[in-house]
Length: 234
Ligand code: TMP
Image (cartoon, rainbow, N blue to C red; front, side):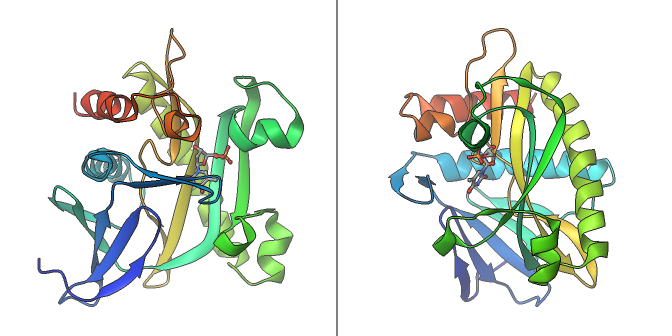
């Protein structure tokens, strides 16, 4: 599949057109940002590793009946995906407290949530992706009530599926972020799922195998991402 015109460049990925108007190429970069791009860097091979990890997870979710944009892994840094209109809402699920939830509520990292917390953030880099609720979504017409019902249903199901998937690999899924898109009138899962967008702790040791190694300068970032890749490739 030939890369056409560049359609969009984000912090970690680029989208290119293809000859088919319904399909685009998602290209994974090595660039990493944190804290709304206040911290910037690159992680050698991250794009290649995240493309492979994302492929494995999307293949798994697809096999479990979740509708997704994933079509196929094309090359080291390229994945073929359906062309969607991204819903301007990021969806976060938290099984244990970490990151911004600890800052928001003054609770300790690692506290187990009695039930998973589902959060919405407005996808607006210029505002720092603020936390919003469903009323904000409907008032700003970011998505319809039917779309949000589908998004919540898929997100809770994905949390169940991925928590079990990672537990078998001795990894605990602490939290993650999803993005959804509209495709031919339906909501489907889009974007990527990788250690950039999930927190994964090794069961037993609590070792962090995700982007917190970059956010908090913990070192061995590439090794941690490779460790996740080798487990999901088992
Ligand atoms: P947070 O604790 O920083 O809000 O992050 C929650 C989860 O969402 C964590 O797994 C990282 C992921 N995430 C993204 O994928 N992109 C983002 O821009 C942010 C803020 C978080």
